[in-house]
Image 1 (cartoon, rainbow, N blue to C red):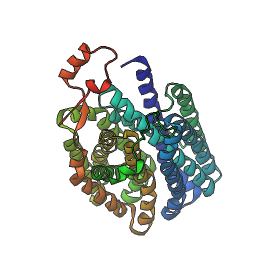
Image 2: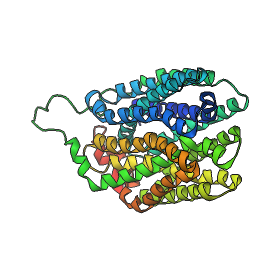
Image 3: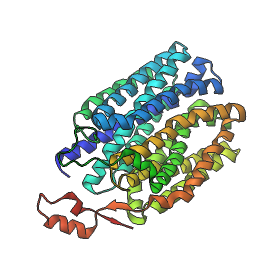
Image 4: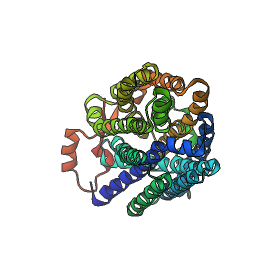
Length: 417
């Protein structure tokens, strides 16, 4: 890996770390924010509606924005909105202003929905350039960010540190990371709109990817597994507090356990993918998530439910990044394919959980999670659509060593079942 690519990969680590840090900082303080707003479960669902609207606008506009401007400016604006949202949410809670918190969540959704699609497109290109599994590790940094943010959130919840100063400090730390990382991201990645090539050729039709049956099945997998992750990120502390009767600090600790399990799964996932292939790993992940969800929903023991969250987190860890990786090498126009399934995933991740709040208000949060369990169960049967993975074989390493420096990258990579 050359120095520029190494720096680019490191920058992407930070671009994944920042939203993880932000979202866990918000999630661990949701019981406090709920109390400061004096909101019911249904009213919190309305507050989260700002997240849904912002997410939809960001997600639906991201593909066109990347095609027009490239990933770099979309990543930059999206991350800046996420950072700003932390300040708005924190001070909205101080003012007991539900509209202000809703506006902050709108900014967060718009920034993450648009920016993260661009980051995943960039990450998929890095994966193809170096010929190794990268996306699970990149998403591992998102989970690492959630672990760090959750740990700080638990501490601040326990000592009753003011929410507004907690989220403002999070914004300052993320801003410093952003300034450092943004310089290493190249321009024009993912950019497809521009002058027609001199030879008269055209880029593949972006609408054609919707007709790819395998790609749509991959989208189904990412929808289910992203919903499983997003439901925990938005509701797990309240699920443990309201559904299992634990105190807020312990509810945040359970969420930290979920985030830690996600992190372990993503950093260790590459080994299992290399050894067993994509489809078996995704099927095992979906089964683990289904087991964890079943116990959290139906077990009356808070201890058992808290332990089951580890299976939930471990199972939800690989579906999103592995599906993105599969989409990236499923056919021509990789950026359009990654953009499509990433949009599906982020719709589930950011837009689905607020809907669970309305179900939770009528039936309880534990019962609402049955919807998530049903989607994850479907993912078990869709796993074969993930197919093979791109890798670098030993014989290709030998060919690479013998190849001249200018040899095409395509000759250095291969696929295996």
